[in-house]
Every structure is written in structure tokens, then in C-alpha cells.
Length: 87
Image: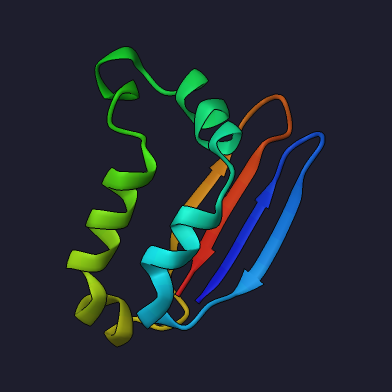
């Protein structure tokens, strides 16, 4: 799996074994999640947290292993914030 995050002040790119997903999500800075929440509609804004993302990914490990190469997350904001997660 490949994780890429870019903001104005921050760049993060890292290949990650699927079994280490929970650890990698915990390493992402909180301000990345704050930037994503700013551009998310109000009823869903509270759901974008490290804990929720980590839980969802850990529940889907078997599916993630079956679909290598699939881009699971692709977010581009108007301010240049970019998040991409490829399996």
C-alpha cells in the first residue's frame, strides 16, 4: 500500500505493508485530519478522526489484500491539500 499526503507545508509519502495500517494512520499528523474536516460536509465532519479511519481500515484488511493497485482514497482540495492511498 502507498500513502501520499501533501499540504502547503507538509509532504508525506510512504509504502506500507497492509498489516501495518493502524500504525501508519496513527503517524499521520492531526493537522492533516483537520484540513480534511474543513472541506467535509457538516454531518460527516465529526467522523474524520484517526480512530475511525484506523478502525475502518483494520476491519477491511482481507478486502485490501485482494484488491492490490486500487486507489482507495483520492482527495484533492482547492487549497492544494492532497491525500492518496493506493492498495
